[in-house]
Image (cartoon, rainbow, N blue to C red; front, side, top):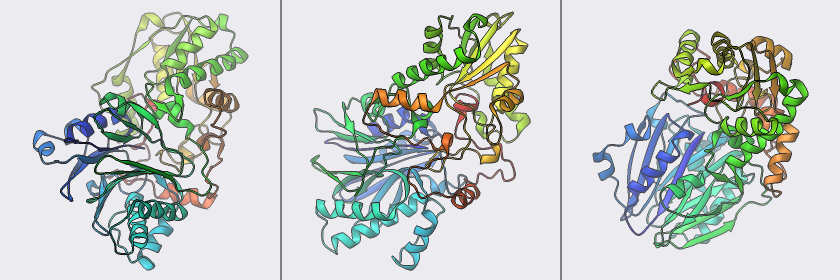
Length: 502
């Protein structure tokens, strides 16, 4: 997963882009980059690390211009160890294009071969984002036919790119001397929104919180398949460029990925998580009598709204039983299972008085590997809990995600090829309650009736793009990011909140 932002203004944009990336930091902590444009020249700086560590004063001063874009990255394809694959990416022809991308192309391998054999374009990394950039560049070269590109040429290039690209993609690009382009895949799997301020600043970003946090009022979401072009004067042009667009947003955005203060595709993420808590309460009642539960305790952070609403519906006390140490490294990059276990204890500490001699219901947003869930259940027992029930605001994760979430291989998913009872026994809980997928989808539809379907592939194995088979999944699992920790399958996980919140 990644967070992206782009901006055209009447004044320098480097600081605003930096501030917006800080607000999107939860979407990627592996690398960060910013590119700006002034007098047809691009200025760019990118490196591995968090936003506050990557950019120093000298770097910011070297990013002049009133048009720019940026990205925070967590790699889902390519080589995560290579700093060369940090974004933005640049290509010099035609015109010069700089681009950032959130998502994952499912046909990157075949496109790479086409680029080489047919389009005669060279890619230098393993990143699918570089493939996407070169496809866009080739199509823009074709539509402009050697002349200065008109706005319609840009839209026609996006239309042609849509016909070639498969998978998920939210894209922001700058075309040297012309303006900023943003577009979204025809299924709208990954989010993208836009806004405009009174001073004429036009901004696009992955989440509405990035706009609001820098003072640009949120206007609307970019529609699936839609392209938005903003010229250097701030004039906005839009056009639907997909033949059959349909809104199928990623359900996991609402479960975990997005910030609760964001709105995605007409749905408040916070309200969505409250609804998850309501639906989960019904599941709890069917499995554990509320009279046998003394307190509802969230596993911080994303599960808090769901846990609070669940407790409210059941009429049970809501308690904070875990305190997070925010200054400990993230568990998903720990190199070994023993270190991983130790890190859980370092990162979460229990408030023993909330557990001693009580039957507690722990609420998490999701359960992926199950290793950390098992450790947290044991922490509750060690603190004196009589019984420990565990509820997940998400359904069982049984399938890999191919649209931009770097989940473990299918064999590493604790729910894969196991019954709920087998997972419960493995984790060590007295009861395990999963969210019902049908109820979850119904709740989302109730918040926005225009969302007829969602990508819930990691829960049900149904891939909305319709082009994924078992062979594709096996190949993509082999192509998961290389991290420099070869042979250690526990060293990489994009979902820290599902395992240990971060």
